[in-house]
Length: 358
Image (cartoon, rainbow, N blue to C red; front, top):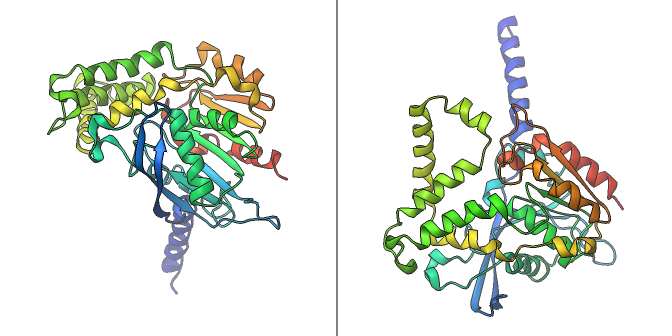
């Protein structure tokens, strides 16, 4: 082999190795679990509630039949479990020798009620779909694990944004179920202030839109664009937005591109329900009930959960085994979206798993 060819082979090998280390994670297995006659907190009942989910890895049990390696990861508002199957999350966590190496862990990624491929308003019922809340979503997740997958214990329960809020609720509602909890991009308090206001703006825009037609529209109402614009506005930080869109024209271009994608893929009723679902979220009164070690991670540039409120620092003191970290603003953070950039916080996850080994 010539020296030049040998160098090229070595360089190619390095590139392949680097690419594999960043993106060499397994494809998930997808399936559905149906809960019959699911009763919502509102009193409404759905004859068949379909929960779609993805799994990676294989479940393991100890000699007593107790699940030892299950990891539940929950997504954010209007998202789905599919959002985690990307290099910046799965590639950093699920690959060989990474913190949640799927040769060792059984990872479960559910689509919450009203999201992804799970039962949702846009399937057929539109605005006649039952009014669901976060308590309903957690109950359905619990039944998916226990009844659908035979998981009676979780090594870790974690989530991002809405999934982070669900994590707080999991710790309160099922305190003995998990070894560790890690909520990301969330606060352990009722949604209020600016966080409630932007959600209310979207809710009002849709409900007051004549084209919404009480949820029985034939084409997506214009208010879906308003919802998309608000999501774009709240999901990043001002520094990054200015960098990516430094002129009027580029800002309009970026916003239009984002909105058009949302309008093509989302549904106004689904968005409306997803935002209204937060109405029953209030873990504040029961934080002392959380028994598992809990590590809450937020970012300093999160417009939805701004650190200047001081809520996380105050409330974490009430969690018996809780601690909190706020990632400083940097050129690597992405505002609220920092929760999906696992490289920013995976070292903290490693420490949490080590601390909770049994």
